[in-house]
Length: 213
Image 1 (cartoon, rainbow, N blue to C red):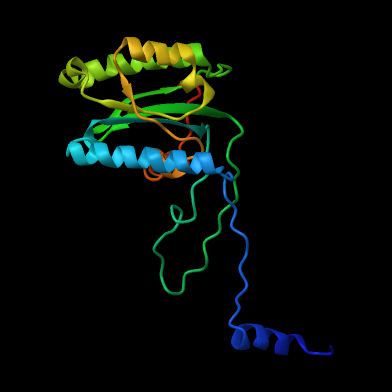
Image 2: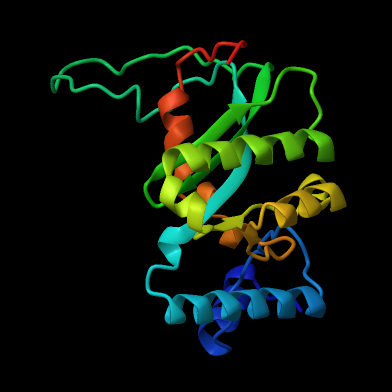
């Protein structure tokens, strides 16, 4: 039509009131059943919190994350106060180490209850995670003896196959541990990803992580 692009842009933006948006990447495309499961889970938690004002403090949250043997410092960590005429600081660009280990951690409102690094070459399967649960219960008994004695706590962890295995569920049932339902593909409900792991990994930056941890 021999119309300049600037005119087309003006017509779209000013005349038609349009705007150009980029697609937003999402981790997963949830099915209607999965979305309904998320809503139901959140409603159940809200109801339990309304019934017990101390409900949130009784939750023991568990999650896992990769920790690198060496992670270079961020730009903000390398900033320095300099004079007005000082030259720009230069820094060599380092890459994070290829050596990494997985950290499994459990915490509540008072702090970390149990943590452990996965040994190199070890796979987190049902048998291994069952051992993790056994160590967690021993730590709860040591850190919060009254809570453990009265079974006055709730466990919430991911919904990966190792944690949903029949042997793990049977073990927790035998120990009278109440677990909170964790819907699949619910990163927004994972508290460690929002404040625990970012702060932890910021402290670990530029600090070599011993492989024997």
